[in-house]
Length: 391
Image 1 (cartoon, rainbow, N blue to C red):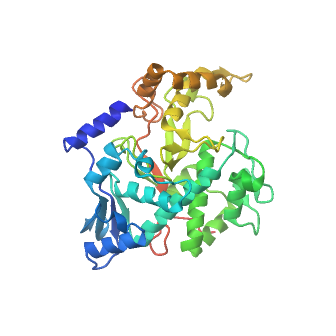
Image 2: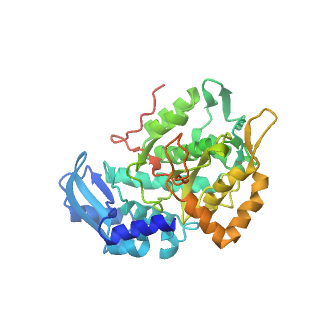
Image 3: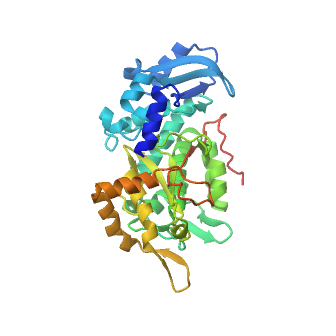
């Protein structure tokens, strides 16, 4: 990771690295850039950042609007090399205790986006921040039982059909069902999930909460769909999410925005054959932490997540049916030993913090770092691009 970050810092210093393109707001009529900036800062409670946030009118991919971004000196001081993982601690933000501070971390990381993020309105941008905040808050409360084969849900909320998945029972509110399913402080028990499905439920909850607030018609359609069938896997991605970055143009390695859905790939081909250990799907919580859906109060640092995935190869065995499995108990002491040994930790991290290979490709050159981030589509009336099916 040090080499990746040093590369990005060197590129920036020589003018070759990704500048902060920030966000582009459309739908602002004839308002001037300074007027938009003033309204933006007031709406988002960020007037104290006025000296660091710049605006200019221009033409975006889908029309005229105003681009807003965090200036280079502030970003270099707060998030050098687009490393946003220490932003909260650098600025003294108490994101665990304060919704305002959490939203501030989200706002600043979006304003330093290296690719530029397009929004059809200021309302839509505000909803994007709300969804990310909702996701982080829900993810912090989520604890589940890891299981790649079994799946459980509260029986007073859901019914299961092999073709339609888990669907809502009549008259059960979607938000209440998602909360009860994922938050044991509400349900009193843990339900079995894979990490991939866990990210879907947490993301869906964050989106549903904002739809219920800002687009009730679309929320009702979403709830009605889930009474008929579940939206899962590739369809879930297509309906609810957009992606930033690509294999050809990666997002900077330590650039994360709270509420991002992130994949860490297992670069070891043999252990990746074990169901559920192809990689690890997580949500970024901000302040350098990622979800641990199985141990709510022990979120992952990037280092611990990389070291754990590295040691999956040392827990590989075959069960009585000849299926690949990972003994997670066996690798726990190996993880702790690596974390306690600076030289070994440096070796493992140098291996794991390389960019991942394409799906299906395994070579010594590949690590576990993904090149993209996933986050919610637009949700506001008149501008939503979330193609929720009609029942």
